[in-house]
Image (cartoon, rainbow, N blue to C red; front, top):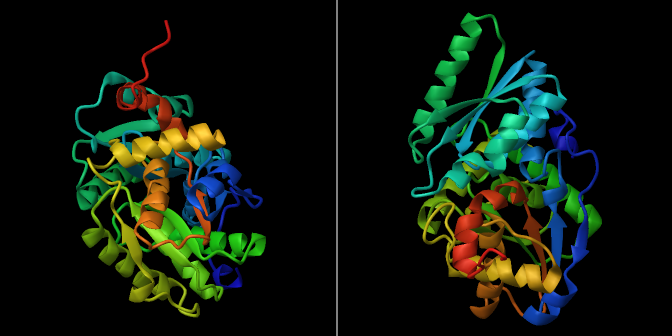
Length: 340
């Protein structure tokens, strides 16, 4: 996307991720359903965050950084991918893990992405609050100051939405990529958490002239909070890329029907999504993001938001490294006893 040529970018997703049709699920749901395999983007179990990190780490390289700092949930795919990408670029990583999900067992706290962060050699620090973006960012800034005092050159990837949304530019590029593969989608369904993927995809589609509807499935906060967040992010993207055709308030669609019982917890729609995708297509969905995203598809067909026969793209944004950290909850929710 030539509009983004002025931004520094590290190449972490060197080729288009696959796009293919889900034949059995299409027949089952009565739509023309395709899957964009961004779970295969980037290193170390892949995922959508690699696209965002191309611009964050590109900026870090341009500033001569030797260390990146990032914050996220205990099982954050973003921090794990950041650590892996930093290694590939010759930088060190400091990952701050926030306590966002209550009442989880030791497997959640030690397995999955936490184990991968350790294998990757990241410095792991913690932050006790899970819903304090400003505080988490301040803690990163304080740690970065301590590193500067030791002669290091840190670059902070902030969590709060008031910072320039460089990561969203990765999904503006992804919009151009998917349109080159197939420009005929009526609807695209994607996770809406921090909002960078959702807002970037929407901004990129409109910049490319595509009218496709983007539906963001809320994975962290309710729709009445997430919709305004996406609007604010779109405004900041417009400031970063003023020559792009902007998305507008009327372009924003969010759905929170699978959010309950909360971030990182499995409710009935997510349970059903995990089972149906595994048993009909042989594909795994993670309990934090992609199960709640795919749950939107049958629900929105049922209420008429997605029309029968529509051509739909489901963005699989990854997250499978965290799957095994959720073994206890997944077995309980799906009624799966350990094999004897």
